[in-house]
Amino acid sequence: MQEIERKFLVNSLKFKEEATNSFEIAQGFLNTHAERTVRVRIKGNEGFLTIKGKSNESGTSRFEWETAISIEEAKQLLPLCEQGIIEKIRYNIPYGNHTFEVDEFFGQNEGLIVAEVELQHENEAFKTPNWLGEEVTGQTKYYNSQLSKKPYKTWHHE
Image 1: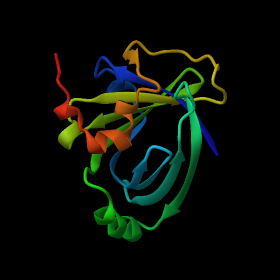
Image 2 (image 1 turned 45 degrees about the vertical axis):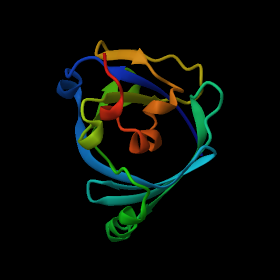
Image 3 (image 1 turned 60 degrees about the vertical axis):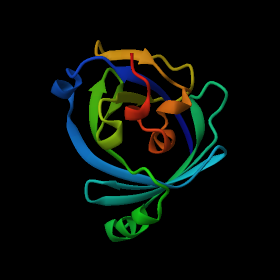
Image 4 (image 1 turned 45 degrees about the horizontal axis):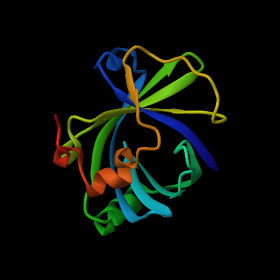
């Protein structure tokens, strides 16, 4: 139940040409405490409840527990969430021995595109596609729980 991942900005829309599938996602947070988050997610026609612990110092690893719930339960829980529902499309892109999950955000986070790759251990090597940009692993402002509180559109862009 340990999640190990690295997170990157995406510098091109070329990832869409390599995607094997995509899903619409709506998610909210019942709790966004610094020590833990409790998330409700609707992914396509499925519902999920997820608890994540605090990240380690590098931001690559943290406890994660997830269970499937009915789509009806997820729809009932979403209105109970804290303000700031996240809307995005997730694309799955196999690359080398890994699969990158690329999230293209909408609503208050429109314009932000982030890629994640899950790893077996923190120092695991992986191939990087040419559309992968700056690494933002451990930068909490890119956590979905934080994007729900301080959306990308409110950042001061240069």
